[in-house]
Amino acid sequence: MYYYIREPFDDGIHNNFSEGYAKKVKLTSELSDGIICIDGQIKYDLNYGDICEVEHQPKYSLKCIKFIV
Image (cartoon, rainbow, N blue to C red; front, side, top):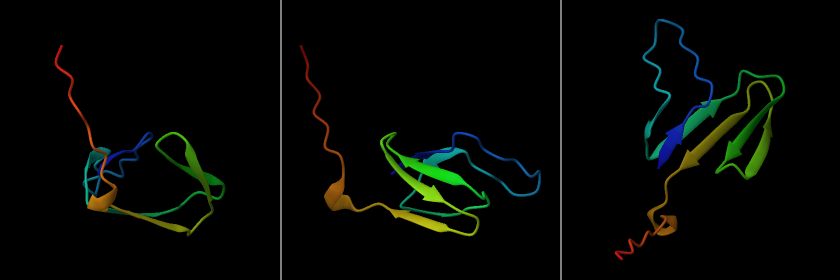
């Protein structure tokens, strides 16, 4: 699963990655009126303290086909 954080925050202490690959991502909201958007289409409202976990499931992996012309 590839993730990309649109507006990363660097606190200067922790090694914060704004994009990469992961099998599981767990987010804890620090926003009072936030939104998480998945694939640019599915949106969920988030409030302060809400936790969102996204996990990769191989059976739902995107299958790609390369056409050679």
